Image (cartoon, rainbow, N blue to C red; front, top):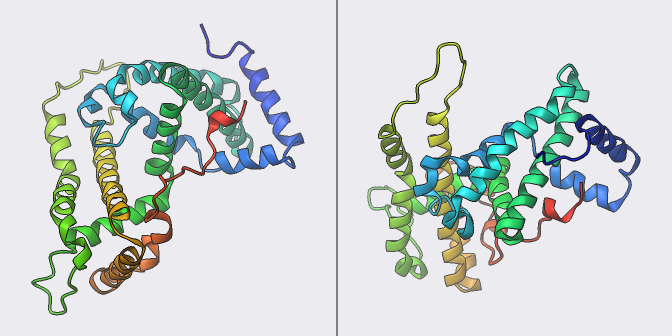
Length: 295
């Protein structure tokens, strides 16, 4: 049974017309902001990664929703239908080019992802579906997040290792109780690729028939998993620091991080975005969800 009771071309065409006639409404403006960066290049690997069976041991380190970690088969089954539905919806538009193809593909992305997350919501709850949506957004769509976590990881990893420097920058006294935990987490995060690659090497090689051209992206998927682990663990450290330090200590910590980033890495400290990543509220907590809008 298909997810889409309405004929596919008619469903997408009607959506295109609706978008054209209602762009001035507040609803459409919010939808535009919500979907503007959801391109297939990014959402495909993002939503595919948690559905890979070999990733199961790493789901917790990757920061997936707790219910999905306990029942990974639920998303695996939904995802198994996700890609075929996307490919089927795109068939009528295969001969389109340029902006027309992009617009059609964008509408298909809206439909398929909304349907998939709606299914997940009905099985594991809306909170889990929204958490997966936000997880995909921060790790696969938000370049600002990726850049910031890379810079913060450098600061946190090197923050207590100033002894071999001509101009040492001592870590804050307020952070001393947290350094053992910070060093432990950064160690596992930085070495994430090694653990995952070793695990991948234990898997049996998949045999592909000669007549079939099947692209196996295990290496790239392992790199994505490692990157997500590093980013997720870095964010957990920042959350821990935010929850532990008072307002004055947090301001001092940010100033120390900016100085460290400038002096030791020689890069622009603005990418640390302390105003965004040193906040008590979870990332995207004030961001709308695709489940809040009907397709």
